[in-house]
Image 1 (cartoon, rainbow, N blue to C red):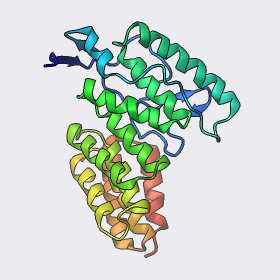
Image 2: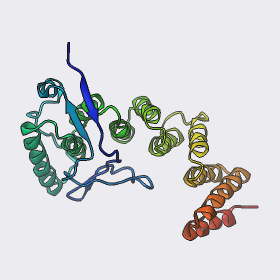
Image 3: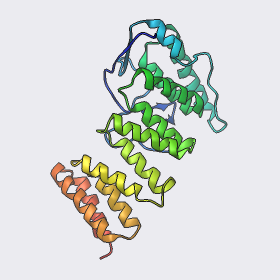
Image 4: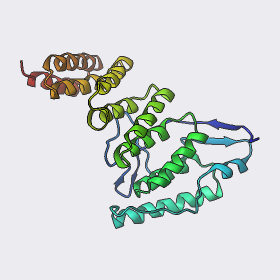
Length: 255
């Protein structure tokens, strides 16, 4: 029987890395308030603690598999990604307890369009850092934007909400998924962003998104109502730039 694995997570942050000019999620900008991590860190954000160090070597991905670049990855990016990948794998071979290097390794695989490698790392991290929703978000985005397996993307984002309901990222990702790619003939997009609005009552973004949605389908009364809710929150936040932007949105709506 395998010994118990004890996990502690030092800091939970959203990871979206820039590697040699290659944006990690090249199809999606980081959400508002989401931190960005670049390369390896000197202060660990994630910590794996095992009763028996040999256990992690039994379940971790093969560090000798190498990295396979997609045909669309530029040569200059390949050089940078390979350099970072080699350094991370070298450190992990010496010390597989370096959780941040595992997270970065998934990023390097993804940046290289080696989606199988990225998936293997993130599924492994779900086992050894179970309190972090970052691997779930990363898997959801990869299946949404690159692999285009929308049911799997939906599943990962829903798991992320269940694990960390205080993050707006999976709500917004699901809205985009339902709005433009999957279940577009349902009310799923409205339902998920409404859930976000009800949960994040001090965040104007869900109301802005819903207002824009109603505007686009020419439900101007609905759009005005949602933009007005966003405006009230922006005023409470004393965000002058946002107040002006929302006010312009309302002014531009047909009467």
